[in-house]
Image 1 (cartoon, rainbow, N blue to C red):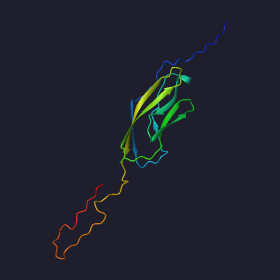
Image 2 (image 1 turned 120 degrees about the horizontal axis):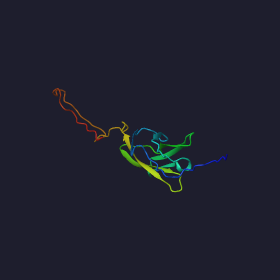
Image 3 (image 1 turned 90 degrees about the vertical axis):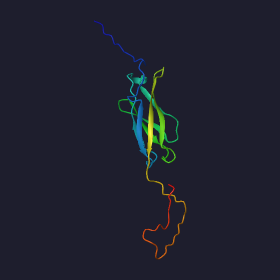
Image 4 (image 1 turned 45 degrees about the vertical axis):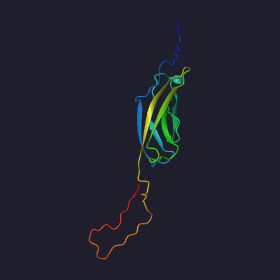
Length: 153
């Protein structure tokens, strides 16, 4: 009787993939920087160094990606808000999230991340004039228009 130990090594033969090609988030413009938003993890049937090793987000000034390694070795990603949002300046962001595996011949997957910035009542109205003046005659009829005030915003 002979005993043999066979070690099977994983080959990087599977591409990473996201369950959804498009991820949508709605974020209030009042959310402060350092807020985190979990995003869907990519999946890869390969294991070890051939599994998902990193995530990247397309260049932008408001969001970065933070990657956490779970106890089972898998990676999860969160969007990190780096800079305050202002809906009046930009109402949406169209980013690309990329997941890379660690194989010698790297394979990757991408998902579109659509972020809608939700408006908040954060701007005071602006009027055509700073001061409005009016006078009314003592015997003016009921309902007479005294002054018309226009707000621009």
